[in-house]
Length: 177
Length: 388
Image 1 (cartoon, chains in turn orange, cyan):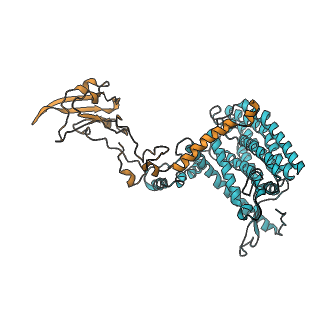
Image 2 (cartoon, chains in turn green, blue):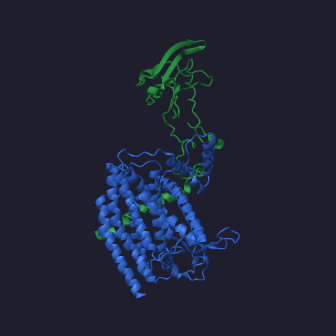
Image 3 (cartoon, chains in turn blue, orange):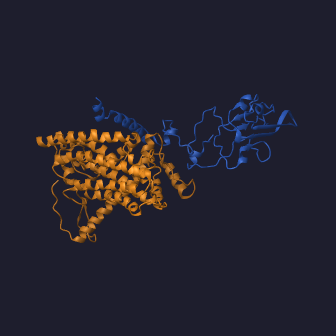
């Protein structure tokens, strides 16, 4: 029986059948049209085709403004207190025409952030979110410091990212985050 | 196919004609081998649910950017998208040619040089006896300088012991591996070379035995006669020895060319890179080229002797096609090349599927199973020949 199994290699046949099936499926579906038609595609062509992120993906910390363009944050310091790595620093201030306190300085040091989303959960006023940005590499250490003052006024918008896609303009419409 | 009456040619005409055929075959090899390395990336990529190579280095500006944009555009179309990343084989070749050539300080200089040549020359010289088409491919127009009006045959030589010549040269190739391993003066190459020697010697026996079945069936050693007779002039019973012989030959061919799952000579998880660990640059390139050329040789032999050669149907099934069936009944170069291409794909397919054999498994498969199997196959072939 063992001799027969060696002479008629069913295992090799099964293995070749499996890999052959995968090869055939991927050989005939390996193009981007299938992505747009929402068919099954073998892999993500990441820099060119934007990656599909889950809604609760935890990216970079970002501050929100309300409809009047006012900062929603009222300096309750809940995020600063709950932050496990203490990357958030807030300085309170008063402002003309605003009853609630106003964050004069809101510093976020991304280099130590662990993206745990405790700050967003602690915030009672929905004034901060973790956005869907994950391309956070930078050449300079200071690029990791975000704030509301001076050169680091980028707490309100996503970090600018470099273009490294070879895709044409038709593919550049979709944002990466 | 009848015996060709030789056309009277002068010595110069003979030499020029041979030169033309040599250049054609070299072009065939030098186009197919880089394509094969590219196909290896893509086939294994698709099997492993990846895309393989789709772009070349250099970003999105300038010439490389234009090439990358073109390849991205190619990705829109189903089968054309397979050829994205095609320029990478030029990059492969350029890398091999321009790389620094390093030789170990205590290496045996002469043998270190000799080994890649010994590996490569037999692999190329084998093609002298391979028949790509059993007849005249075309006739040069009369205005052509030296060879005007002369026919171009689909084979270079029509020697009567073609198969013996091929087998003899094919076993010279292992000397290149062993000598290169020994000359490197390093432990991993030596181990790889010793393994390779044992493996090739073990598998040479069932390889030759499995090729003896077609020899018995046709009663000839001439490559052209054998390949034509095996396709058209067999009894129906000859399918059995041809079918068993094909799988035995293909397996031994995998072992002969040191391909996965028998790549113990360059087992990269155990020996760093086996016999060519110390080789760099173009000297490594010759080893590489000879390995892939050997794959083409094995595929060509399996095609000619078992898969019906220049005819459409494999295993001698071509005899059931009536001669009046048009192009199906005629030999064609495309059939031969296409079957070689399919077998090369099988090489990559098996590489993507099977893990490497252990050394003792390799030996026991070779000696305990393949030699008896091919001997039984030889007996069946003799029986078929005796009955007919």
